Length: 60
Image 1 (tube, rainbow, N blue to C red):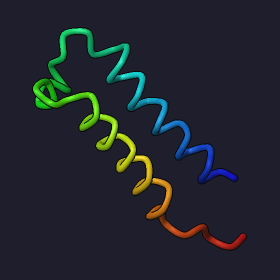
Image 2 (cartoon, rainbow, N blue to C red):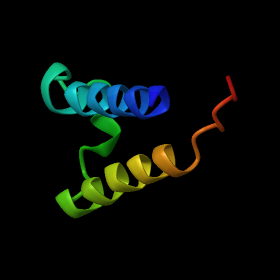
Image 3 (cartoon, one colour):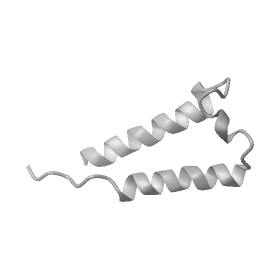
Image 4 (cartoon, rainbow, N blue to C red):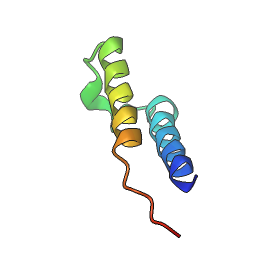
């Protein structure tokens, strides 16, 4: 459960930074010339890798 919450927080932080906090496009400027479809593929791939390749949970 904690891994799911951590993954959700990371995804929310990245999306908030891209869409809301980075108004001047200084951090995400390297994606400026990308099409919308390319950006969707990038973020979809990032979310997929983040959820599939997360470290295994330790047994309590």
